[in-house]
Amino acid sequence: MLTSPLVLLASLCAGLVQAQPTLEDLYVDNAPSSPRPYVIPHYANSHAVTVESQLYRFTVTGPSSGYTFTLMSTNAPGSGSLGVLPHIHRKHYENFFAFKGRFQLWAQKGESEQQARLLTQGDYGSVPRNTTHTFQILDPDTEMIGVISPGGFEDLFYAFGTNYSSDTGTIYVPKASTGSSSPSGSIMSKLQKFDVYAQNDFEPRRDLVNGTAPVDNSEWHTGSNELGAPGEPYFIANGYGEKYLNSEHGYQVIQPLVSPKQSQDTNHTISTISISRQTKNSPPSYTLSGAAAFEVLEGVLSIKIGDYPVATLNMGDVTFIPAHVPFTYYNEVSFTKVLYVSSGNNGVDQQLIKSGKSWNWITWPKN
Ligand SMILES: *[C@@H]1O[C@H](CO)[C@@H](O)[C@H](O)[C@H]1NC(C)=O
Ligand SMILES: *[C@@H]1O[C@H](CO)[C@@H](O)[C@H](O)[C@H]1NC(C)=O
Ligand SMILES: *[C@@H]1O[C@H](CO)[C@@H](O)[C@H](O)[C@H]1NC(C)=O
Ligand SMILES: *[C@@H]1O[C@H](CO)[C@@H](O)[C@H](O)[C@H]1NC(C)=O
Image 1: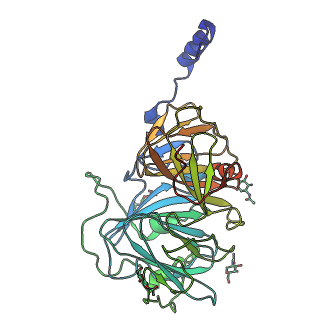
Image 2 (image 1 turned 90 degrees about the vertical axis):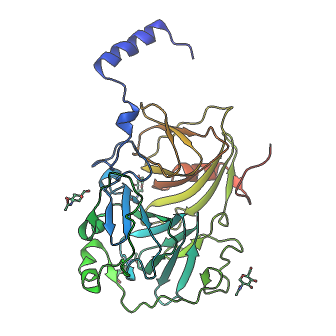
Image 3 (image 1 turned 60 degrees about the horizontal axis):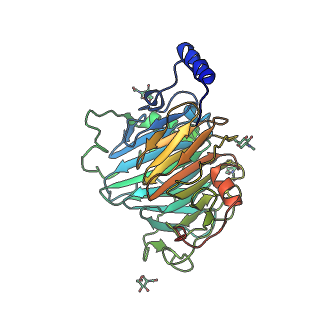
């Protein structure tokens, strides 16, 4: 780009008054106390708390997102018992995503049949409000990602968890599970002010076959999974969901996990987006009316937010972009896949889907 001496002079003078923000300003260890752009590296402290053997990190919080959504992760060893006693949230829509490892998830809405699934890397489970649910972590190297809308649900964990910090950055504390990672029934009954309603009569079914119960019609890792009816729980196995191909700037394959139809009242969307190497056209700039976050699942994401220098995010890193702040993202490696969360119904994922086409593959065309 040609820069005239006058422009150069003007920006130099501006620089004397206000220093350009640096990457160090963008990178934080804990989600900030009010919305601003930031990047949190994978396994940073992120307001971590422990609940028995489970280590929770909160990469987007109520305060950091203007109370639009919470983004969190749970690392824990496998356990022989439930990770939490069965319960309902009346106001919060909870979303479970397997970053790595294995966990089991149960969900039941009203009198509908109880559903259970075994989630492995990239699988997703949707728990809308008033759905009884619980989970159990199964493998030694498991990380669950949680998206909860609206934001602020982490207050529950601050209330009954133990604040955690580590000099070594260990991903969880290596000690055997005591059997129950769950607060006791008496504590659970005190949690209604945090929107947790214990469901003590819920008996988690154990009759899973090939990762699912019931077996009939569930198509778990065997066929396509549709997004559910509004208010109903549903599950999408990695790559088996609806997909769209967008060809505007390199290729992008979008797999929606929550679309505006499912989250009418909680007002968020979630998708995975797989991005080809982008070399030819300069990528577009987005300025959204809602907050957004990216968590890298594979590859390397480059992102320029506002006046900050370009940040390059690796697997597990999270970036948060407040509403009305311009940003541009692109990919310089072969295959980058992100989990994308957006407040409102017109985030990057919905825009890419609108100008894309229905597509059957997790990857893009050869040419
Ligand atoms: C735990 O951390 C939170 C913020 O991360 C803080 O508000 C709270 O005071 C801490 N609690 C204790 C007991 O240190
Ligand atoms: C959830 O259940 C509570 C209590 O039954 C009810 O008041 C509320 O309207 C329900 N919310 C939704 C979104 O169904
Ligand atoms: C479980 O998976 C195996 C291997 O694909 C298959 O042969 C078997 O029929 C499945 N069982 C049920 C109950 O679907
Ligand atoms: C949904 O979110 C968008 C973006 O944050 C916001 O502009 C809009 O007012 C919200 N709608 C509702 C009904 O809350």
